[in-house]
Image: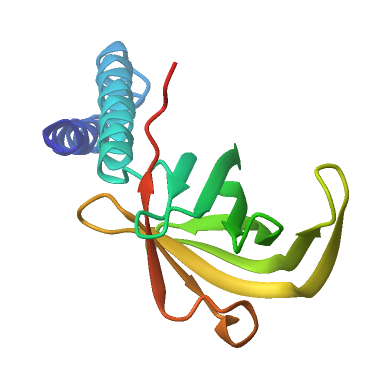
Length: 178
């Protein structure tokens, strides 16, 4: 900020010298002052932009999350690009059936939420180890994910009347074993 003020003062000085002089404004002194002012403004703008990037520290949603109470649900979040993510949720109802959600989500810095509006929800039923059928319940689901202060991932579905995700559900980031 100090550099921006200094650059503004130098620019004002250059203009006032040029106005008071009968000589052409493109003298060597005014060129040097103009160059110094330009460099100071450029450096100040770069510094402000860098500070703004540090302030806007968006959370890293990428990873695997598990539901800690029953332990039957996992969420896989993959970063696609920019603020866009691919989310897959699998909730095991039994050894032969699971509820599944697939969605594209976008992070909005203004709300701090990872929001989706195009979720596909289906129930997969296994007939044996290799064969299954999918019963699609909806393809236009909506909802959101967010982080709590303790680091847990929250999930709220706008389609709870169909998918049974009533209220808020919380997940813990899974430990990665290498």
